[in-house]
Length: 457
Image (cartoon, rainbow, N blue to C red; front, side, top):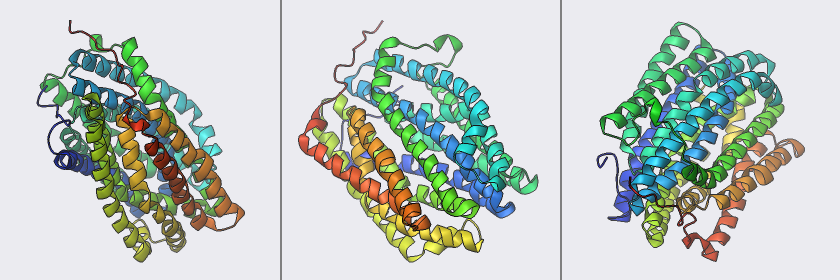
Protein backbone atom coordinates (compact mmCIF):
# COMPACT_ATOMS: atom_id res chain seq x y z
CA UNK A 1 0.00 0.00 0.00
CA UNK A 2 2.86 2.41 0.74
CA UNK A 3 3.88 2.16 -2.92
CA UNK A 4 0.44 3.33 -4.04
CA UNK A 5 0.10 6.22 -1.56
CA UNK A 6 1.83 9.62 -1.50
CA UNK A 7 1.64 11.94 1.53
CA UNK A 8 0.88 15.47 0.31
CA UNK A 9 0.66 17.04 3.76
CA UNK A 10 4.43 17.09 4.26
CA UNK A 11 7.33 18.63 2.31
CA UNK A 12 7.59 21.76 0.15
CA UNK A 13 4.23 22.82 -1.27
CA UNK A 14 5.55 23.85 -4.69
CA UNK A 15 7.48 20.61 -5.18
CA UNK A 16 4.58 18.41 -4.07
CA UNK A 17 2.12 20.35 -6.24
CA UNK A 18 4.23 20.22 -9.39
CA UNK A 19 5.28 16.58 -8.94
CA UNK A 20 1.64 15.58 -8.53
CA UNK A 21 0.41 17.84 -11.35
CA UNK A 22 2.85 16.77 -14.07
CA UNK A 23 1.63 13.13 -14.37
CA UNK A 24 -1.97 14.34 -14.08
CA UNK A 25 -1.36 16.89 -16.84
CA UNK A 26 0.34 14.28 -19.00
CA UNK A 27 -2.59 11.94 -18.38
CA UNK A 28 -5.14 14.58 -19.38
CA UNK A 29 -3.13 15.58 -22.43
CA UNK A 30 -2.95 11.98 -23.58
CA UNK A 31 -6.65 11.44 -22.86
CA UNK A 32 -7.54 14.57 -24.81
CA UNK A 33 -5.26 13.48 -27.62
CA UNK A 34 -7.08 10.24 -28.11
CA UNK A 35 -10.41 12.08 -27.96
CA UNK A 36 -9.06 14.44 -30.62
CA UNK A 37 -7.88 11.40 -32.59
CA UNK A 38 -11.53 10.48 -33.12
CA UNK A 39 -12.21 13.92 -34.58
CA UNK A 40 -9.02 14.08 -36.64
CA UNK A 41 -9.32 10.62 -38.15
CA UNK A 42 -13.07 10.86 -38.75
CA UNK A 43 -12.66 14.38 -40.18
CA UNK A 44 -9.98 13.27 -42.63
CA UNK A 45 -11.41 9.89 -43.68
CA UNK A 46 -15.14 10.67 -43.57
CA UNK A 47 -17.50 13.56 -44.24
CA UNK A 48 -18.60 16.51 -42.17
CA UNK A 49 -21.75 14.61 -41.15
CA UNK A 50 -19.66 11.96 -39.38
CA UNK A 51 -17.55 14.67 -37.71
CA UNK A 52 -20.71 16.35 -36.42
CA UNK A 53 -22.05 12.97 -35.29
CA UNK A 54 -18.96 12.25 -33.19
CA UNK A 55 -19.21 15.71 -31.61
CA UNK A 56 -22.93 15.52 -30.76
CA UNK A 57 -22.86 11.89 -29.60
CA UNK A 58 -19.80 12.69 -27.53
CA UNK A 59 -21.65 15.57 -25.82
CA UNK A 60 -24.23 13.15 -24.41
CA UNK A 61 -21.55 10.73 -23.24
CA UNK A 62 -19.71 13.70 -21.70
CA UNK A 63 -22.74 14.40 -19.49
CA UNK A 64 -22.70 10.86 -18.12
CA UNK A 65 -18.94 10.95 -17.58
CA UNK A 66 -19.19 14.25 -15.72
CA UNK A 67 -21.87 12.73 -13.51
CA UNK A 68 -19.64 9.88 -12.38
CA UNK A 69 -16.71 12.27 -11.92
CA UNK A 70 -18.86 14.19 -9.43
CA UNK A 71 -19.38 11.15 -7.20
CA UNK A 72 -15.79 10.08 -7.72
CA UNK A 73 -14.71 13.52 -6.48
CA UNK A 74 -16.58 12.85 -3.24
CA UNK A 75 -14.56 9.66 -2.82
CA UNK A 76 -11.33 11.46 -3.74
CA UNK A 77 -11.85 14.06 -1.03
CA UNK A 78 -12.78 11.47 1.60
CA UNK A 79 -9.83 9.23 0.71
CA UNK A 80 -7.45 12.19 0.86
CA UNK A 81 -8.77 13.30 4.24
CA UNK A 82 -8.67 9.78 5.67
CA UNK A 83 -5.03 9.48 4.61
CA UNK A 84 -4.33 12.83 6.31
CA UNK A 85 -6.08 11.53 9.45
CA UNK A 86 -4.38 8.13 9.28
CA UNK A 87 -7.77 6.35 9.34
CA UNK A 88 -7.07 3.11 7.42
CA UNK A 89 -10.33 1.32 8.19
CA UNK A 90 -12.48 4.16 6.89
CA UNK A 91 -10.23 4.29 3.80
CA UNK A 92 -11.09 0.65 2.99
CA UNK A 93 -14.79 1.17 3.54
CA UNK A 94 -15.09 4.25 1.35
CA UNK A 95 -13.16 2.53 -1.46
CA UNK A 96 -15.46 -0.49 -1.47
CA UNK A 97 -18.51 1.77 -1.35
CA UNK A 98 -17.57 4.00 -4.29
CA UNK A 99 -16.56 1.08 -6.52
CA UNK A 100 -19.79 -0.79 -5.79
CA UNK A 101 -21.93 2.32 -6.18
CA UNK A 102 -20.51 3.30 -9.57
CA UNK A 103 -20.66 -0.26 -10.91
CA UNK A 104 -24.37 -0.41 -10.11
CA UNK A 105 -24.93 3.06 -11.53
CA UNK A 106 -23.18 2.14 -14.80
CA UNK A 107 -25.47 -0.84 -15.35
CA UNK A 108 -28.64 1.14 -14.68
CA UNK A 109 -27.60 4.14 -16.78
CA UNK A 110 -26.66 1.93 -19.72
CA UNK A 111 -30.16 0.44 -19.92
CA UNK A 112 -31.99 3.73 -19.38
CA UNK A 113 -29.93 5.75 -21.83
CA UNK A 114 -30.16 3.15 -24.59
CA UNK A 115 -33.93 3.53 -24.37
CA UNK A 116 -33.81 7.35 -24.36
CA UNK A 117 -30.98 8.11 -26.80
CA UNK A 118 -33.27 8.83 -29.76
CA UNK A 119 -35.50 11.39 -27.96
CA UNK A 120 -32.39 13.04 -26.45
CA UNK A 121 -30.78 13.52 -29.86
CA UNK A 122 -34.05 15.02 -31.10
CA UNK A 123 -34.26 17.28 -28.06
CA UNK A 124 -30.90 18.91 -28.76
CA UNK A 125 -31.91 19.53 -32.37
CA UNK A 126 -29.39 17.18 -33.96
CA UNK A 127 -29.17 18.02 -37.68
CA UNK A 128 -30.83 15.38 -39.87
CA UNK A 129 -27.65 15.02 -41.93
CA UNK A 130 -25.69 13.81 -38.88
CA UNK A 131 -28.48 12.13 -36.88
CA UNK A 132 -27.64 8.57 -37.93
CA UNK A 133 -23.93 9.03 -37.18
CA UNK A 134 -24.71 10.61 -33.80
CA UNK A 135 -26.99 7.70 -32.94
CA UNK A 136 -24.36 5.11 -33.90
CA UNK A 137 -21.63 6.82 -31.89
CA UNK A 138 -23.87 7.19 -28.85
CA UNK A 139 -25.12 3.58 -28.96
CA UNK A 140 -21.61 2.13 -28.83
CA UNK A 141 -20.32 4.46 -26.10
CA UNK A 142 -23.41 3.76 -23.97
CA UNK A 143 -22.83 0.02 -24.31
CA UNK A 144 -19.31 0.54 -22.93
CA UNK A 145 -20.16 3.13 -20.28
CA UNK A 146 -19.11 0.75 -17.49
CA UNK A 147 -15.50 1.04 -18.67
CA UNK A 148 -15.70 4.84 -18.84
CA UNK A 149 -17.13 4.88 -15.31
CA UNK A 150 -14.58 2.33 -14.12
CA UNK A 151 -11.53 4.23 -15.31
CA UNK A 152 -12.69 7.51 -13.78
CA UNK A 153 -13.58 5.84 -10.47
CA UNK A 154 -10.29 3.97 -10.10
CA UNK A 155 -8.25 7.01 -11.16
CA UNK A 156 -10.09 9.15 -8.61
CA UNK A 157 -9.25 6.66 -5.88
CA UNK A 158 -5.55 6.64 -6.78
CA UNK A 159 -5.39 10.43 -6.96
CA UNK A 160 -7.09 10.75 -3.60
CA UNK A 161 -4.24 8.63 -2.30
CA UNK A 162 -1.77 11.10 -3.82
CA UNK A 163 -0.86 8.85 -6.77
CA UNK A 164 -1.08 10.54 -10.16
CA UNK A 165 1.61 8.52 -11.97
CA UNK A 166 -0.18 5.21 -12.49
CA UNK A 167 -3.34 6.73 -14.06
CA UNK A 168 -1.03 8.35 -16.62
CA UNK A 169 0.51 5.01 -17.60
CA UNK A 170 -2.93 3.44 -17.98
CA UNK A 171 -4.35 6.22 -20.13
CA UNK A 172 -1.19 6.24 -22.27
CA UNK A 173 -1.76 2.57 -23.10
CA UNK A 174 -5.38 3.37 -23.89
CA UNK A 175 -4.34 6.23 -26.17
CA UNK A 176 -2.01 4.07 -28.23
CA UNK A 177 -4.72 1.43 -28.57
CA UNK A 178 -7.33 4.04 -29.48
CA UNK A 179 -5.27 5.62 -32.28
CA UNK A 180 -4.43 2.23 -33.78
CA UNK A 181 -8.04 1.07 -33.60
CA UNK A 182 -9.28 4.40 -35.01
CA UNK A 183 -7.03 4.01 -38.03
CA UNK A 184 -8.22 0.43 -38.54
CA UNK A 185 -11.94 0.88 -37.86
CA UNK A 186 -12.35 4.30 -39.51
CA UNK A 187 -9.50 4.53 -42.01
CA UNK A 188 -9.43 0.92 -43.24
CA UNK A 189 -12.92 -0.45 -42.58
CA UNK A 190 -14.73 2.87 -43.13
CA UNK A 191 -16.96 2.51 -40.06
CA UNK A 192 -17.00 6.31 -39.46
CA UNK A 193 -18.59 7.37 -36.14
CA UNK A 194 -19.36 3.76 -35.18
CA UNK A 195 -15.69 2.81 -35.58
CA UNK A 196 -14.51 5.83 -33.58
CA UNK A 197 -16.86 4.95 -30.71
CA UNK A 198 -15.83 1.29 -30.75
CA UNK A 199 -12.16 2.26 -30.60
CA UNK A 200 -12.86 4.54 -27.62
CA UNK A 201 -14.73 1.86 -25.65
CA UNK A 202 -12.10 -0.84 -26.25
CA UNK A 203 -9.28 1.49 -25.24
CA UNK A 204 -11.12 2.49 -22.05
CA UNK A 205 -11.58 -1.19 -21.22
CA UNK A 206 -7.84 -1.73 -21.59
CA UNK A 207 -7.10 1.09 -19.14
CA UNK A 208 -9.57 -0.31 -16.59
CA UNK A 209 -8.10 -3.81 -16.64
CA UNK A 210 -4.55 -2.46 -16.39
CA UNK A 211 -5.57 -0.36 -13.38
CA UNK A 212 -7.25 -3.31 -11.65
CA UNK A 213 -4.18 -5.48 -12.28
CA UNK A 214 -1.87 -2.86 -10.76
CA UNK A 215 -4.04 -2.47 -7.67
CA UNK A 216 -4.35 -6.20 -7.04
CA UNK A 217 -0.61 -6.76 -7.58
CA UNK A 218 0.23 -4.09 -4.98
CA UNK A 219 -2.11 -5.52 -2.31
CA UNK A 220 -4.72 -2.79 -2.65
CA UNK A 221 -7.33 -3.02 0.10
CA UNK A 222 -10.06 -3.87 -2.44
CA UNK A 223 -9.46 -7.17 -4.31
CA UNK A 224 -12.29 -6.80 -6.90
CA UNK A 225 -13.77 -10.17 -5.99
CA UNK A 226 -17.56 -10.41 -5.95
CA UNK A 227 -17.73 -10.82 -2.17
CA UNK A 228 -15.84 -7.54 -1.69
CA UNK A 229 -18.46 -5.40 -3.43
CA UNK A 230 -20.31 -3.78 -0.56
CA UNK A 231 -21.93 -0.45 0.27
CA UNK A 232 -21.30 0.89 3.77
CA UNK A 233 -24.05 3.24 4.90
CA UNK A 234 -21.82 5.67 6.80
CA UNK A 235 -19.48 6.11 3.84
CA UNK A 236 -22.35 6.28 1.36
CA UNK A 237 -23.83 9.20 3.28
CA UNK A 238 -20.49 11.02 3.27
CA UNK A 239 -19.96 10.33 -0.44
CA UNK A 240 -23.38 11.80 -1.17
CA UNK A 241 -22.76 14.73 1.16
CA UNK A 242 -19.51 15.63 -0.59
CA UNK A 243 -20.03 14.14 -4.04
CA UNK A 244 -23.69 14.85 -4.76
CA UNK A 245 -23.27 18.64 -5.04
CA UNK A 246 -20.35 18.11 -7.43
CA UNK A 247 -22.36 15.50 -9.32
CA UNK A 248 -25.31 17.88 -9.67
CA UNK A 249 -22.99 20.69 -10.67
CA UNK A 250 -21.31 18.58 -13.35
CA UNK A 251 -24.63 17.26 -14.61
CA UNK A 252 -26.21 20.70 -14.80
CA UNK A 253 -23.12 22.09 -16.51
CA UNK A 254 -23.19 19.24 -19.01
CA UNK A 255 -26.91 19.68 -19.65
CA UNK A 256 -26.28 23.37 -20.21
CA UNK A 257 -23.82 22.34 -22.92
CA UNK A 258 -26.63 20.37 -24.52
CA UNK A 259 -28.69 23.56 -24.65
CA UNK A 260 -25.66 25.33 -26.09
CA UNK A 261 -25.43 22.57 -28.68
CA UNK A 262 -29.05 23.25 -29.59
CA UNK A 263 -28.32 27.00 -29.85
CA UNK A 264 -25.31 26.29 -32.06
CA UNK A 265 -27.36 24.00 -34.29
CA UNK A 266 -29.97 26.76 -34.67
CA UNK A 267 -27.35 29.41 -35.41
CA UNK A 268 -25.38 27.54 -38.05
CA UNK A 269 -26.45 23.92 -38.51
CA UNK A 270 -24.04 21.11 -39.29
CA UNK A 271 -21.13 23.41 -40.21
CA UNK A 272 -21.36 25.30 -36.92
CA UNK A 273 -21.69 22.03 -34.98
CA UNK A 274 -18.54 20.64 -36.56
CA UNK A 275 -16.67 23.93 -36.02
CA UNK A 276 -17.57 24.18 -32.33
CA UNK A 277 -16.68 20.51 -31.88
CA UNK A 278 -13.26 21.13 -33.42
CA UNK A 279 -12.65 24.23 -31.28
CA UNK A 280 -13.82 22.32 -28.22
CA UNK A 281 -11.16 19.68 -28.81
CA UNK A 282 -8.48 22.38 -28.98
CA UNK A 283 -9.87 24.05 -25.86
CA UNK A 284 -9.60 20.73 -24.03
CA UNK A 285 -5.83 20.92 -24.60
CA UNK A 286 -5.69 24.57 -23.54
CA UNK A 287 -7.48 23.82 -20.27
CA UNK A 288 -5.47 20.69 -19.46
CA UNK A 289 -2.78 22.48 -17.37
CA UNK A 290 -5.48 24.29 -15.41
CA UNK A 291 -7.42 21.09 -14.78
CA UNK A 292 -4.26 19.28 -13.72
CA UNK A 293 -3.29 22.02 -11.28
CA UNK A 294 -6.86 22.25 -9.99
CA UNK A 295 -6.91 18.49 -9.32
CA UNK A 296 -3.51 18.75 -7.64
CA UNK A 297 -4.73 21.60 -5.45
CA UNK A 298 -7.84 19.57 -4.57
CA UNK A 299 -5.82 16.46 -3.62
CA UNK A 300 -3.36 18.50 -1.55
CA UNK A 301 -6.19 20.41 0.12
CA UNK A 302 -8.01 17.20 1.07
CA UNK A 303 -4.97 15.67 2.74
CA UNK A 304 -3.96 18.93 4.44
CA UNK A 305 -7.46 19.69 5.70
CA UNK A 306 -7.55 16.12 7.04
CA UNK A 307 -4.20 16.74 8.74
CA UNK A 308 -5.44 20.05 10.20
CA UNK A 309 -3.31 22.29 7.95
CA UNK A 310 -5.73 24.65 6.10
CA UNK A 311 -3.10 27.37 5.58
CA UNK A 312 -0.89 24.90 3.73
CA UNK A 313 -3.88 24.05 1.52
CA UNK A 314 -4.41 27.76 0.81
CA UNK A 315 -0.75 28.15 -0.17
CA UNK A 316 -1.15 25.30 -2.67
CA UNK A 317 -4.17 27.08 -4.15
CA UNK A 318 -2.25 30.35 -4.59
CA UNK A 319 0.72 28.67 -6.28
CA UNK A 320 -1.52 26.55 -8.52
CA UNK A 321 -3.54 29.57 -9.64
CA UNK A 322 -0.42 31.57 -10.50
CA UNK A 323 1.15 28.80 -12.59
CA UNK A 324 -2.13 28.06 -14.33
CA UNK A 325 -2.74 31.70 -15.25
CA UNK A 326 0.67 32.01 -16.90
CA UNK A 327 -0.11 29.03 -19.15
CA UNK A 328 -3.65 29.99 -20.16
CA UNK A 329 -2.66 33.60 -20.85
CA UNK A 330 -0.16 32.26 -23.40
CA UNK A 331 -2.92 30.19 -25.03
CA UNK A 332 -5.10 33.30 -25.24
CA UNK A 333 -2.41 35.22 -27.09
CA UNK A 334 -1.86 32.31 -29.49
CA UNK A 335 -5.50 31.89 -30.55
CA UNK A 336 -5.98 35.61 -31.04
CA UNK A 337 -3.04 35.70 -33.45
CA UNK A 338 -3.54 32.32 -35.21
CA UNK A 339 -7.24 31.37 -34.88
CA UNK A 340 -7.64 29.84 -38.34
CA UNK A 341 -4.61 27.60 -37.80
CA UNK A 342 -6.42 25.89 -34.91
CA UNK A 343 -9.59 25.16 -36.89
CA UNK A 344 -7.82 24.05 -40.06
CA UNK A 345 -6.23 21.17 -38.16
CA UNK A 346 -9.64 19.47 -38.05
CA UNK A 347 -10.82 20.02 -41.61
CA UNK A 348 -10.68 22.16 -44.74
CA UNK A 349 -14.35 23.09 -45.21
CA UNK A 350 -14.33 26.91 -45.72
CA UNK A 351 -17.59 27.55 -43.86
CA UNK A 352 -16.50 25.42 -40.91
CA UNK A 353 -13.24 27.38 -40.70
CA UNK A 354 -15.06 30.73 -40.73
CA UNK A 355 -17.50 29.54 -38.06
CA UNK A 356 -14.69 28.14 -35.90
CA UNK A 357 -12.64 31.35 -36.04
CA UNK A 358 -15.65 33.48 -35.07
CA UNK A 359 -16.42 31.23 -32.09
CA UNK A 360 -12.82 30.80 -30.91
CA UNK A 361 -11.92 34.50 -30.86
CA UNK A 362 -14.59 35.38 -28.30
CA UNK A 363 -14.52 32.14 -26.31
CA UNK A 364 -10.76 32.55 -25.78
CA UNK A 365 -11.36 35.37 -23.26
CA UNK A 366 -12.35 32.58 -20.87
CA UNK A 367 -8.65 31.63 -20.79
CA UNK A 368 -8.02 34.79 -18.76
CA UNK A 369 -10.51 33.90 -16.03
CA UNK A 370 -10.88 30.14 -15.78
CA UNK A 371 -7.53 29.32 -14.09
CA UNK A 372 -8.60 31.19 -10.95
CA UNK A 373 -12.09 29.66 -10.94
CA UNK A 374 -10.77 26.11 -11.39
CA UNK A 375 -7.96 26.25 -8.84
CA UNK A 376 -9.99 27.97 -6.13
CA UNK A 377 -12.85 25.52 -6.65
CA UNK A 378 -10.38 22.63 -6.36
CA UNK A 379 -9.13 24.11 -3.09
CA UNK A 380 -12.67 24.48 -1.72
CA UNK A 381 -13.59 20.93 -2.77
CA UNK A 382 -10.62 19.59 -0.83
CA UNK A 383 -12.14 21.11 2.31
CA UNK A 384 -15.53 19.61 1.47
CA UNK A 385 -17.14 22.91 0.40
CA UNK A 386 -18.90 21.25 -2.53
CA UNK A 387 -22.25 22.86 -1.72
CA UNK A 388 -20.76 26.26 -2.44
CA UNK A 389 -19.12 25.04 -5.64
CA UNK A 390 -22.53 23.65 -6.63
CA UNK A 391 -24.05 27.11 -6.20
CA UNK A 392 -21.37 28.76 -8.31
CA UNK A 393 -21.64 26.01 -10.91
CA UNK A 394 -25.40 26.49 -11.19
CA UNK A 395 -24.86 30.23 -11.43
CA UNK A 396 -22.40 29.79 -14.27
CA UNK A 397 -24.23 27.11 -16.26
CA UNK A 398 -27.90 27.99 -15.80
CA UNK A 399 -28.25 31.63 -14.80
CA UNK A 400 -25.42 33.08 -16.87
CA UNK A 401 -23.95 31.02 -19.72
CA UNK A 402 -27.04 29.72 -21.52
CA UNK A 403 -29.05 32.98 -21.33
CA UNK A 404 -26.03 35.07 -22.37
CA UNK A 405 -25.23 32.74 -25.28
CA UNK A 406 -28.84 32.88 -26.45
CA UNK A 407 -29.06 36.65 -26.06
CA UNK A 408 -25.78 37.41 -27.83
CA UNK A 409 -25.98 34.63 -30.40
CA UNK A 410 -29.66 34.69 -31.41
CA UNK A 411 -31.42 37.75 -29.98
CA UNK A 412 -28.68 40.20 -30.97
CA UNK A 413 -27.80 38.15 -34.04
CA UNK A 414 -24.07 37.92 -33.28
CA UNK A 415 -24.02 34.25 -34.28
CA UNK A 416 -21.21 32.01 -33.08
CA UNK A 417 -19.18 34.99 -31.88
CA UNK A 418 -22.00 35.77 -29.45
CA UNK A 419 -22.29 32.15 -28.34
CA UNK A 420 -18.55 32.04 -27.64
CA UNK A 421 -18.75 35.20 -25.53
CA UNK A 422 -21.11 33.50 -23.08
CA UNK A 423 -18.28 31.47 -21.50
CA UNK A 424 -16.07 34.34 -20.27
CA UNK A 425 -19.08 36.36 -19.11
CA UNK A 426 -20.30 33.42 -17.00
CA UNK A 427 -16.81 32.75 -15.59
CA UNK A 428 -16.34 36.42 -14.65
CA UNK A 429 -19.61 36.42 -12.70
CA UNK A 430 -18.69 33.25 -10.84
CA UNK A 431 -15.21 34.52 -9.97
CA UNK A 432 -16.69 37.59 -8.29
CA UNK A 433 -18.90 35.38 -6.10
CA UNK A 434 -15.95 33.13 -5.20
CA UNK A 435 -13.81 36.10 -4.17
CA UNK A 436 -16.54 37.35 -1.84
CA UNK A 437 -16.82 33.88 -0.29
CA UNK A 438 -13.08 33.71 0.34
CA UNK A 439 -13.17 37.04 2.16
CA UNK A 440 -15.75 35.63 4.61
CA UNK A 441 -13.13 33.16 5.90
CA UNK A 442 -15.53 30.20 5.76
CA UNK A 443 -13.03 28.26 3.66
CA UNK A 444 -11.01 27.57 6.83
CA UNK A 445 -13.74 25.24 8.16
CA UNK A 446 -13.32 21.59 7.16
CA UNK A 447 -16.86 20.56 6.25
CA UNK A 448 -16.20 16.88 6.89
CA UNK A 449 -14.10 17.25 10.01
CA UNK A 450 -16.66 15.15 11.89
CA UNK A 451 -16.31 12.18 9.54
CA UNK A 452 -16.70 9.03 11.67
CA UNK A 453 -13.50 7.27 12.70
CA UNK A 454 -14.01 3.54 12.28
CA UNK A 455 -11.93 1.34 14.56
CA UNK A 456 -9.68 -1.32 13.03
CA UNK A 457 -11.12 -4.82 13.33
